[in-house]
Image 1 (cartoon, rainbow, N blue to C red):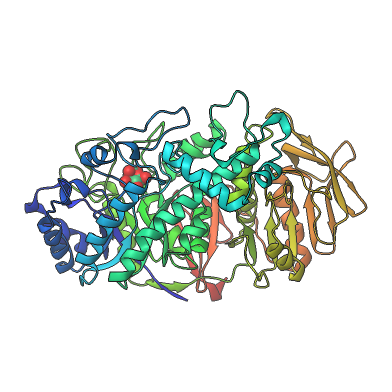
Image 2: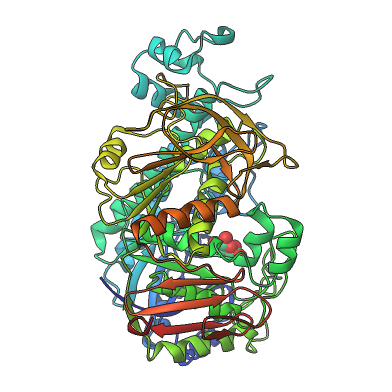
Length: 638
Ligand code: GAL
């Protein structure tokens, strides 16, 4: 599939006097931007009172942007219901786990389960789509904005409770079956009726993890349904592609399932904010990367969203300079905005949009930079975007490479480790990410694959660490796969209802291994592996007749292998994972190259890209990379 690359920005005409819109549009086009996203927070200006609409300004803004040659992404405004909405539906507010309403005064204050708000959403989306569905300048849509941002997937409201009870009825049929599935005989937690079922919050000690998992499944489905409600309406009026802008490390809903209803996946990439806010690295790592971001975190999400978008994906918001919302908000190293942009393109992005065009001098994000300063003077990102726009003239299209390695990524596995971590920091997301980082350290391009993948035959290696339940579909796909599989720890460790299966885990096809017990480790404990590397955080005691390929210093099996399956009985550190993966690659003839600590590479069909996430000059082979440098070579010459 050929990918045409473009740049864009996020613009809020309602924040600025009309007199400057035309000049803004002209400057955007002159900078080389092709796309502009608008509308997603503008409900109070479009419908200042219930049923009273003011479209003139939005008509005019779209016209001005379109006339300047820009393509418009129109966002539905449902992430910011106006104040009058709360008067109409006082119980529409989401409720936090302590039972407090999440009040009006910022955004995303709605509960996904509220039927009244769903109806209001249908109404406003219908108005938008009817008015702009055939507008020649509206070339794509965005539903809502960042589902899940600010912890807003899960709501403990009264309406959500009722909806959850109905969901349980539909899933389990009878309350006896539900009691059985959750093991409610334990601690006399049995229900007599679906109406007895409450949320798994505010319990004396931990709630039943099966109850938590059910509630998480329900909450995820509410997002999927809510998104679909918008999509169905837009489709009735428009044949333009529909996207949603997902976020970094938001795992509370199944992005694949939302993505099934959309043409494009997009995500909002804030590398420096994420480093400080949601990556469990050491202080010294963060110190060293504070102006560059984590060298693998963006790539991981690019690859996830390429999978979520079934090949079509964008960066809908790209950090342009300091943000306002992380614990610390440094400025990027000069060159990083360009690097992040090219990295997205190298992973197959069609479009990278900078957030935002001009820094707003008011309200919550007044400290968040833009392409322009509040006084409209060019901010540093302007010049980096300008450089990318120039470079795109000779590199405007490409194709994705056939990656040799796939990592199966699964949202439910994260919900299970949320419900039952069994040790601080033992989260599925981090385990999957660690495997991903090891592959990247070896210079490999990786595809993310969903758990219902039927056919893995495009790959030479498939990684399934922590995939907590192996579905029948995945089992068949693995059985048919003749490449190498690396599993564990915690792979196939639970039933679909979150209990311990029998036969005991991992019960993988063709592998004689039984986990006798598991243990989690405090951060100061590392279990050295004889062949190199360590187990951290988590270890499993294996009973096995399979070939032992790694052993703890105490002499216990650390990794075993049978046919094409390797099972790793603990959480490997990078040294261990890189070694295991590299040995596997060597065995089956997949070429690897150990990257210097700060360098990552990514292949496309036609190019090999190198990125320097370090703040010092470095080199790899004959390639010199300045700090924040990006270099690409034609694939034929590699
Ligand atoms: C995103 C959001 C934007 C803006 C931005 C600031 O999460 O979609 O509206 O708030 O963060 O970095």
